[in-house]
Length: 227
Image (cartoon, rainbow, N blue to C red; front, side):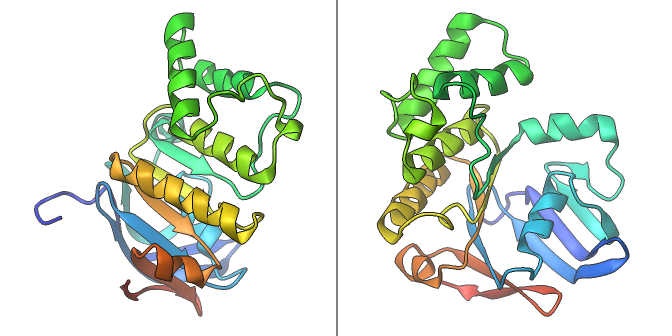
């Protein structure tokens, strides 16, 4: 990893919401292609930390850079450009329930500037194959299991070949075996070049799939030793 420039670099960052300190003295770096876990109890600030990376929560002080953008004074008009380089995987899927898997993915591509129908179709086929869901494009989200829906959410997150994927408790609503498969899928995607930050409560996953670990506790985000 030496010699590579960090794609996220936070130094002495303080994050607060409505004047309440969520995290302070945050020092965090993410290198290209790295897999990092964030652990900590519910309400410890993990999700809020992720929100600062995509411009949804403000940084009060310190220095914070994501993919070359200064997140402390990023302009509102630059946030969509930044977000195109990020993939976000939510615990509760957030799929559009009134349209098929294919149309969910097409909606994202059109919203991010894809106009050519053939290129759009090809990219959707590629990501569905990558997550092992190539035959599910015609299904509605409610016809899929939780694990299948999460695979579609990951497909959605990688449509634009992001530099960074933020996975917020991606296994939180899944049984243990399905959760393992989702982590394996994320590890495969990481091996192909996207850096990943994954929040999790499931400490068993850290043993099975080691990576760099940070812990949120007592308004701090600290390295928890490398697994």
